[in-house]
Image (cartoon, rainbow, N blue to C red):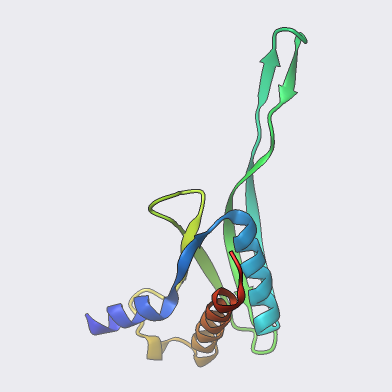
Length: 136
């Protein structure tokens, strides 16, 4: 059981305060710069059309970014890459309270490739530094 707790602890990075989508994208930019690698992701966007009786036509509702998905963080030097899941905040599901790497199920930390574990640790360091230096 200790191995499972260890892998969860090593692969989960909890944010001191929840981040909205714009701040999370800024964090992903800082991760890319900090590890000198790539961060790729998708933005899920919501929009709608609403019929206006006076104008007798439909108008587009404001576009809203709803979520960030399929996040891939890659160290371009070692070629280590990992998918990351953003964890929504319990208090506000439009914000994120943590990120979690996608480890191999059933593997302990020591059974993962060393360059992948280093990537987890490097990203954690960047995230910790980000929260030390940002003004909210």
